Image 1: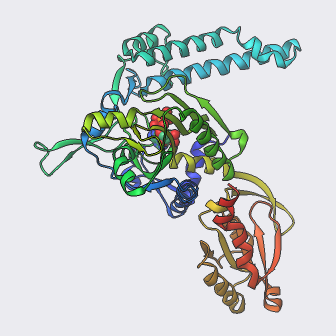
Image 2 (image 1 turned 135 degrees about the vertical axis):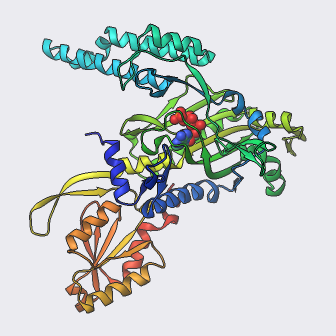
Image 3 (image 1 turned 90 degrees about the vertical axis):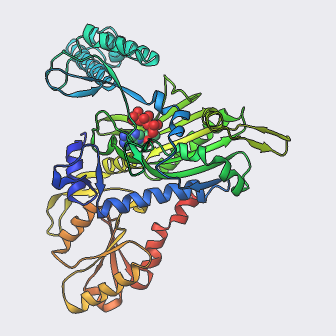
Length: 511
Ligand code: ATP
């Protein structure tokens, strides 16, 4: 059963993971805030990325460059000229769409319809279903979908907005909201937010909020090279905010106007880029799998149309509740960025190779993952509704967030079975010790069953209970969130027990 994104957003708000931005003022589209649990999840994911990229690689260093950059940066990078999306308005519903997604989604609906109808026909005839894919190709709707996708990608490749306008008219693409096929002409829309530098708007320079963190890395390349004693191949990694005035910000935190990226630019000798491209594809996929994203929910999707800077590009796609979509991009960017910044700034952005006694402009392999999309992937995969046994021997529905223990916002919860002085005292003592090592919580309110459920929904992997037996023999129970198994462990060994399971070093070692 597919999880509804609206339901997930409601759950995330209720639990304090993610709130709509500026909610008391009716919100602001495409902007979200991270609540007490969300901020923990976000920090942990970012930390595990940083450790895997920077801490584990001798030849990768970190950077934290500014959001505001010189306006020439975005001319050099090609964003002023080319960072556009084509948009269109429906005259009846007054809704605005990105033309490419409008047509792609329409084509997808046609394909699904063709598939459903073919399956029905085959079943009726008693024909084997393995012929479905072959048969579906003969369907009119399916063929129309292919034609639409071809015409769309040709027009996009030529940036031919007039062709897109005719495509909408000729093919009578309807507005998903009103069903109307009356469209305005397709226009282009630059996705960068602009603002003014300096106190007086009239005299000030127009600048942009960065639409990606990568350019900070390219611009600082010569400085990092000078201070870092780095030898090619080497990388520079950065985590930071990026801003895009997306035409339609939708699907919860999948497409935001303010979001966070974790990017790494890996500088290599020209001629070796194909090798490093494969290395980074493999490493990045492994990182996601190692954090528990299921292999069947991840796939590579190579780009058919390459961006202006790219030689090769692939996406790691994740099966979000609305289908497979980009989670991370891996791009072979050639020497495009460094060469452009060299041309625009008049500075040399080269690497001197001592072994060959010559300078060259390195080629770049980029890995770029959206932190918010990563959070959405873990939340949507982890959200589970299941029947679970109650203490009274019955069954009840439990909502449990099955996320990797290392990214759980609260890693361990400590409960006294009942609110009696001797139970409470022991539980507080244990909690006060554990919090030095793990993100811990203490709770004494409500029945033990309700407390377990409450922390299941927060994704807390371990819950410790101080019960009658603890008072006799100093042992406690540790309950596992996913298996519901309880083990009895001496209080003195709780820290070691949790340490084994929550130690980042163990995880890194097996990466
Ligand atoms: P899309 O095609 O979905 O718009 P993109 O190809 O423009 O994405 P990139 O420019 O490759 O994305 O950005 C790298 C990563 O940044 C993406 O893989 C994604 O995880 C994240 N990202 C990009 N745009 C957004 C956004 N509007 N909201 C949240 N994350 C984003």
